[in-house]
Length: 550
Image (cartoon, rainbow, N blue to C red; front, top):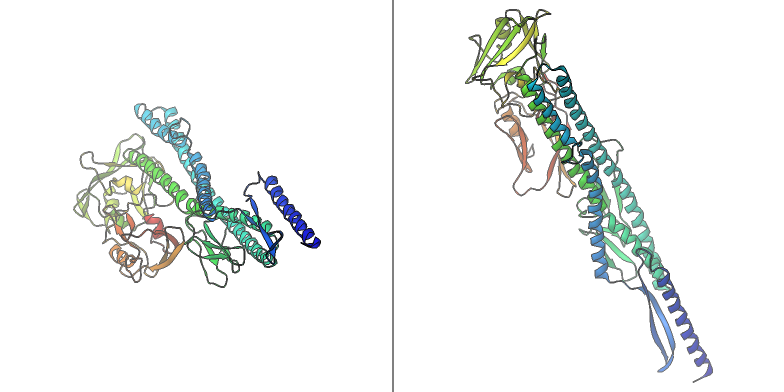
């Protein structure tokens, strides 16, 4: 063996040992670095003409178990989804306070009914009246505050989605750039472990934002795809887009997330999101927070309805000079039809002495006032005639009003105690909201009492658009539906449920016995429907079809 060969062999050993020491040094130095992957130096023996000529470190690689890495990334993605859901939903929950506590929102609701119960035992107590009214106002103010805060949570989720999309774009750009660097290092037999370590950390960050799958490229680096196979990086990087508005949105007008693959077409990314922070944010924004707001609205609607039921069953003493109802969202002829039972409109003086009385009887589609037959079209004229000028009933912009003619007189509505008037379970005064305690500028009760034969009051050609979301949150399709000629609910339902000009391929609308309009998916359909826009205006009330039926 020549002296040169001996020296070269020794030198190769020293260089290999130096490389191994550097690798060990890196591993020890980064033992507490989050996301750091241990390095391994692959050392091989060298021979020359069958004679050993030293050692060489052919490459420095990461000690990565691809199966465990994929499992860890999947678990991290799901943990991130659940974490962001917990964070935002905990904020929503905190708005209501402890359900079993004495100071939370639900305790306030209980205190409202307790206040009115106490008032019933001492109805002449001014302090109790003021306390009951204060508690009622406070709980509705608190409900409005909570509803606004829920919308702010949605807006926050929306803003974080925008930030997440920008972060994903930055990560994909850096991962693709590192792919090129790793490939060059492999081609020149250089140490690629540095950029590979950085790339592994970036992949971990990306996995927290959205679920991804990685595979090793032959040239070095990785190919990154979404859970459903969309190419994100490996042959160029994909670009994500998100249309964003910083304003608090009303219902479901938030934007969609789109992805454009390298050399591919632009399409929705929501098909690909099954876990990660982006998926969790979309779930809270589009499903869970709106569901909480909807349940809150349903609770407060029922609380208001029950308070109004009791208030309309009674009258102030002395009665007020004027009773002004709520906007029922219908023409009077439609609203007055369908009642049963008996009611009375009474005009009294300041001492409570009856000055005029109109006894109203509804039976089997017919109606009388003091025994005088009337129709929906002539009811108001007949009622005013029977009141003899002591009071006037009028209907404008969807609102029924009763006005006593003399300033010192009052007007009251009282149902017959044996056979009270009823429509959708509400008496004459309650249905029109003539003596409501809790008032609203828009319809709040969606049991309209309308039937298939009822005239809906929307002009033919007016349009509204329905938006259908897949179960993962992506927009499937927008469908615009025009109000058909005919004017009755039967023709409107037929148009809505048409598979050609309506939403019949996705589900169907039905009108129940109380006139509430509901939508149900076709069997097996797991999509969600929302209103994208509504250009309908009902005459004479001025409300939209969406507002009328909720």
